[in-house]
Structures are given as C-alpha cells and as structure tokens.
Image (tube, rainbow, N blue to C red; front, side, top):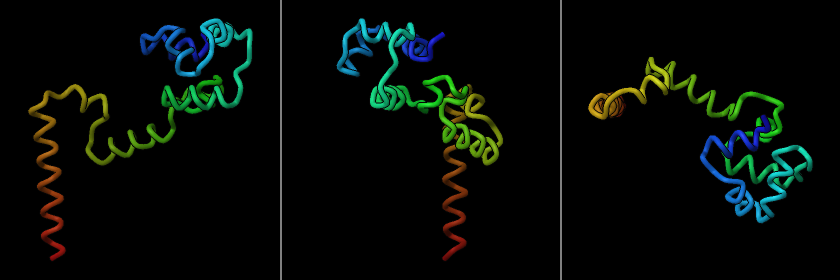
Length: 114
C-alpha cells in the first residue's frame, strides 16, 4: 500500500483533508496515492512534516518512521527499565508515582551538589 494512503487512513483522514494541507485538488492526492503522479520534493517535505515521519519513510525507502524517536525510546527504556508501551499501560497513579520518584531523585542529586 502507498505510504501516503496508509498514513492518511491511519489518522482517519480523507483525501480532501490532505488536499487542504497541501493546497491541491483531491484528484491530485488520489494520483499520488495511486502512484499515477510523482510528488514534488516540496510536497514530500510537507507531508513528512505533517505526519511526523522521515521523507525516506514516506517514499517507502525505510520502515523506520522516525529514527530520532526510536533512539529516544531505546534510551528511555534503558533509563527507566520499561518501554514506552509498558509505561502507557500504567494507570495514572502509577505514572504519578514514577514522576514523583524521578523528581525526588533529581532534588536529592541537586542537594548533593551544594
């Protein structure tokens, strides 16, 4: 499936929504999705920014949507011992406990510097 169509459908958007973002016709979006027309470099950049993905992901050259985010996720997991997905499954009380503990440790570290 075309990545533009995939991303659009993933967000529950219509071709008309993308047409408004790009300032083009709905038919042009359809041509892009059906690969009957190539996107200009400017269009590719606008769409990548809009969807928060790399241009390479949008063009199907990689399956990594955003390598910077992927690195952040790995670092966060290494630092707090759980993945973003695991953290998101916690209830609000558990999330608050983690934040409160992090603040406690940070404040304790700042006290050691004095």
